[in-house]
Image (cartoon, rainbow, N blue to C red; front, top):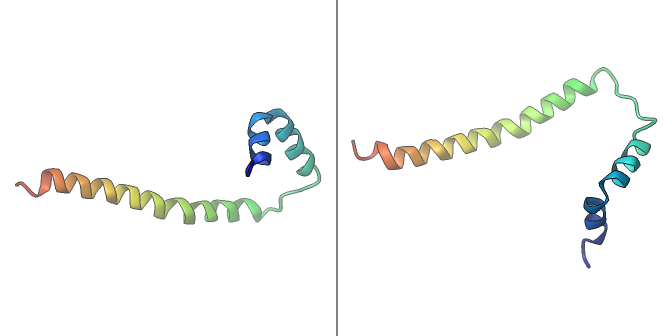
Amino acid sequence: MFFNNKIKRVLDVEKSEAEFEEQMEGVELEKTDRPAMLIAAFLVFIPALLLVIGFFLLVIWLFFGRFV
């Protein structure tokens, strides 16, 4: 099977969480890591959110705005 490791990870969540905690045990965040993660999240989610809102506005305009 192509995705055997991914399927095992999904089916055995507790083992995956234990492995993740083991890997992250010695990793410490610096004080600039949190703002960097927030900026990256905004850069990813805001354009996607604007596209979804734009799509819904276009659909609303096509259904209701053209007939007035």
